Image (tube, rainbow, N blue to C red; front, side, top):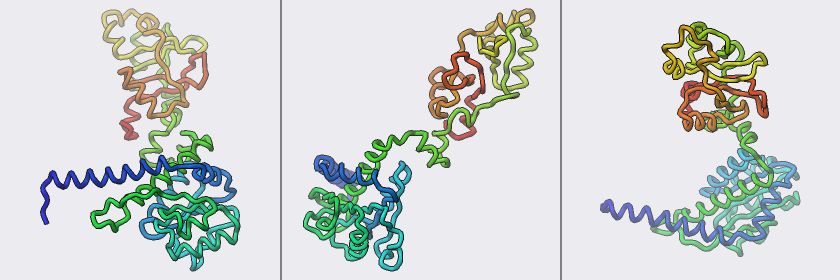
Length: 324
């Protein structure tokens, strides 16, 4: 069966609209049980253990990963494996989240029984309010009635999208209640592009002997030598107290080219230079460099009113990291 491109697009949009309608209905259906579920996640002394089978199991794995990466210790237990020893992964200090669209998944029954025996909170997520899972759950979260986006109404589509959205809502609400910050997030995501974006300036800046710092009395012939040896296209002019009072850039050299043989750094420098702090996120520092249309910035310590340079960042540093 061949379809015109317009028909393919229409079907794709219909699927997305049906799933969007399901998520919208779910958002409107959230009630006090959602609040209770978030409070149970926060109060857990142990982990949040999530289980499901089939498509619900795939969603459960993603919810567990999202919770774990945003400050709520969590893990996935395969429903079919639980009755064969993996039940030991669930302790009396935990909270369980069980997912089943029908609420009657047979493999979840042993997990449900074990959790009840331990007396721990059970958050049940299902589309059927009269199902076994919802009846037995400590905190039932019922998905609103919504049509699956599958053309033959069989493949879990809208229902699993709602489950996924509900899991995200639980994780993000718990994250807010915990006061989970970008600093906390960076500690859990040291690798990959997220880790790079969440690096702090002090982790990438040049410091110590690499800093091109000169006094205002230095002749420009010597200043040019310093700038050339450090290769940043900039020199920081510091006073006797090591406070940054100006910078000399390649642009300053061009503007004062006829004076360089007689001028000092203090004569040529641009005063009141922009600086950033060492605790600024690398991503924010790069954004600031681009907004100001400059290639290098001196770095000061957080809340340092003396403007004492402790480092320097250059746009090439961000390129090497792959942040641009």
